[in-house]
Length: 307
Image (cartoon, rainbow, N blue to C red; front, side):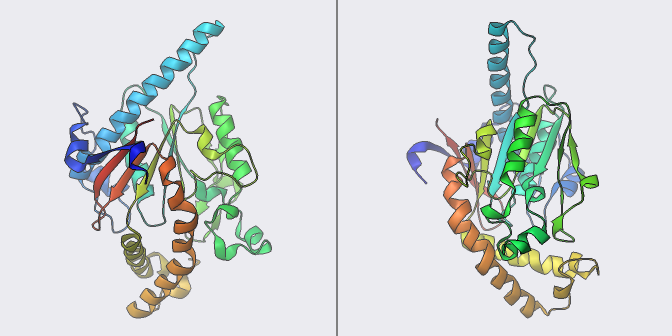
């Protein structure tokens, strides 16, 4: 990472940026927000996510000020556009938990109570289409997403369309769900868009997903740590979700612990690590904020982009 682009903060230095931001979550709330095998507690919220929510709140206020200035210039009623946050990072790094915690905290700020969350998993091409294109084994790589559909959703949200529908994804059946399961987005104050490749550029269009972001966050960790977290998560799923007969991965449910570890490492090596190194990690320097995690899943350093 180009250190000149970022100002770095230790955990304690970043915690001090919380100022007087109140803690509005409880242990019971965290039980609902915590991902598999993740160390999320109130200290993590106070040290990392409260300062982050304060930073976002200041950016939201600044964006609304710019919107109001433009509306005044044009002689129009001020109707602020939704503020959009992008959250990127590897499989198993904890970006979904980061997104959920941020959604919960921001939704408790009085100035912007409506905070919606969209994951880009829903914008993967369906399995049948991926198979037709020979991409089923590259699910999660940039080419496996219907980027134009995601761009159209973001364009509509930013344009103030009253109701926008977002496709959803089932990790149980490992496929995009039918249209009746679409999430409905109705002019939120803030929209969080979470996904592997949301900071990606290129891919046959001059407009990028990140063009619609007002602020972006990259959840970072050493590859060795993410690999270990992936294997640990796979083992937990083997004992839980994979046991369901309707799970796409039910065939892994009866593996021994050693066999499951070997299988998880193979999937990680052949798919997820390749995608991380080739496509995801190179976008890190495009983020506004980088949350770097240590081996225990706790954030040890925060980097804030200077410009």
